[in-house]
Image (cartoon, rainbow over all chains, first blue to last red; front, side):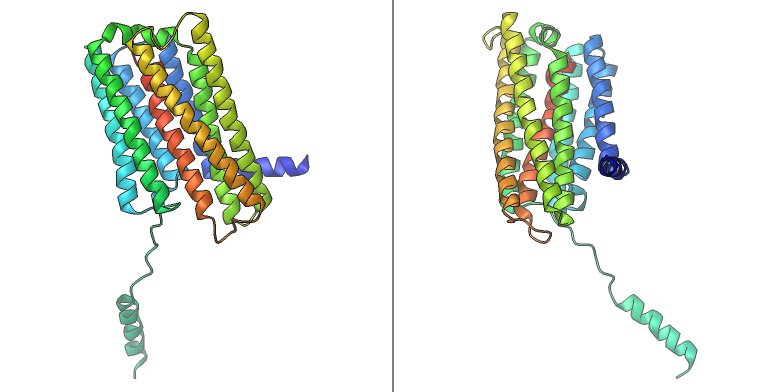
Length: 96
Length: 206
């Protein structure tokens, strides 16, 4: 039991644990927007911002691409940002 | 030589010697990254097809998400994010040379992968109970195409993690040699990254 408490304390101080908690919180915000059925352009853009933040954390901290070659970083980040932009643009267009 | 000359010389030497630059290293092998780029391209095409269909059939795509279970979509997102965190912990453990902890985190990742598959099966059953099939309309055809494809990737990822877990148990990966484990981890993170886009696209945005 003592070991488990020590292990949990160690884990909670790590950056990856804090990022995981933040990812969970942002996901809950997205899901609550989905459940509310709010379909304005503003909410679409807000959800896209959440997606960008989540993707950035996963790419930089979880995948560890923060210290990867610039070529890999540019491809993965470029892909993710471009796809999110296209999603935001087309979903907003259908909401006009 | 005067003392001030010595210190000037030392300063000059410091400027002349280039400071060590932290090398940029992509985790995993080059082969897995080529595979990851191909997978990202594949999912990118799915997203574009989904968005084109959304422009042509806005009513179906507007009503679609409200008929799906957001709870199962949310649970799957939480499970995948948690599994990615487990993989990060496994990589940190192997870098510290802690073999047992690495195996523990990898086993938890496998468990998360299987949980994802279980939740997805439950979601498909819920859909079937209310008469939703891939032939219902264009929204649900796209939904099944994307999510089933992603489910297959989760299954492949789970098998890969299971394989590297066995290799870790046999002592194949060490503190200094764990490129294979990093490759499997990168693939798993790619699956998570793609789901971060799928979740709002299918369940949240209308």
